[in-house]
Length: 407
Image 1 (tube, rainbow, N blue to C red):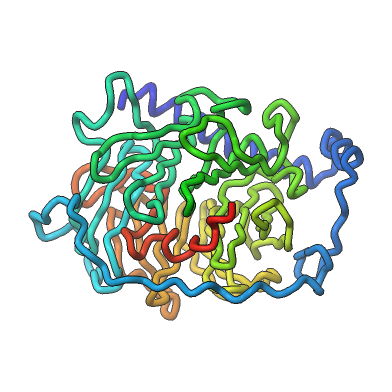
Image 2: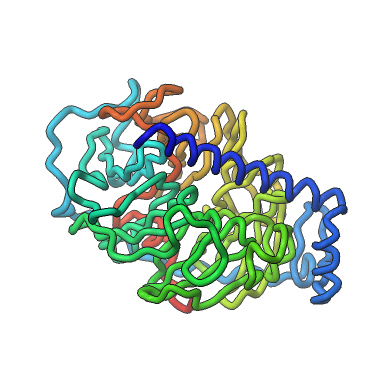
């Protein structure tokens, strides 16, 4: 990728992070007059807070989460589209391949590619290869990537390029896009720094639309939202602040839970909100001790995990009442942490240019792909890896999104 394009995308990303942080600071200071006017106009309620800074429709009397729906994980089957392994792997010394149940999908952000890496550190699949893109088509700055529930597609969110791409894994082709590459907006087929798009059971896309302060539900092949949770006018209506479901404080993730609900992470004010399929707010809570929350998801009912996209960065687990349960520090702008079936945590440590697995019982790194603090493109190197998933049947959506088909 030409250096000017890399610089442009880097500047865009820094500006988005700065604007989000500024919006949160202004809202907290009480000088965002537009926010106050909006809250008066639509009579948004002031919900009661508890001692932990959480709130719900009835404070502490909020009904407990329903029990999780059991998802049977079938045995792993070799995927025919994976390239044969031809070398010994490129893991950091001391890595244990046995801690991973399957290959790892990585959104290698500044290398403009997606990789599937096996537990031994061998690249088994890459997009785009030469010839994968149609004439005039680009694939810039993939920020996150998740498998569809059936494992046939990968949804790549290109936050800095304002587009979401659905890729056929077997055909190595982009088969659908929402958004216009390089064009920020809020109307039909437009996004403003989208994040963490996922293809739900039933074929609908859910995406956090950061700078438009909202969450969208999209039904491909359509190019207009099926449902908007948040302001319909997006960018035209002002800044982002915490007032769900009418508006979100720069939402950077809407992750399904096994109860058929969604955890929305809001950068401004450090909020995590549990949202129902039609936008009902069950509760909101602050991630404890976190400056920049990113991609909160569920470890188990009542137990959450979020990344702190900061320097120094951290990953924390906490209760839905905001009580800290576990943390690991010493990271550099980590943006996503996913629990593994064995209890370990898969983390992309973005600005340290590595993907790691941490054993929370010892807080030790037990697996690492990438060289600490050294960006690169050769086997064994990454450049700002910004998203991870596991290959089916252990992928995030297979394990978490079975009930989300009602969206």
